[in-house]
Image 1: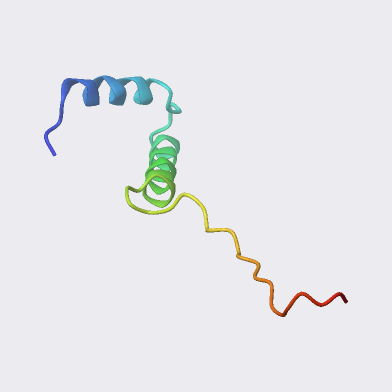
Image 2: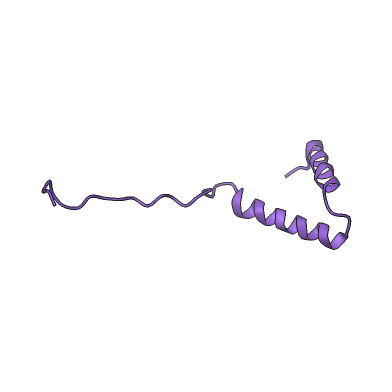
Length: 62
């Protein structure tokens, strides 16, 4: 992927919001990376599909 100028702008915006301590800033970036790979990854569903309920049996009343 080619790095575009808008990528750099976003990086500057995010970096300006990071904590001052390097260790804390890197922890935040690791967590943000984890969020992107776990929840925003392309091609993966955002949620588990809902379970399907199927009727078994005929038209008899219980």
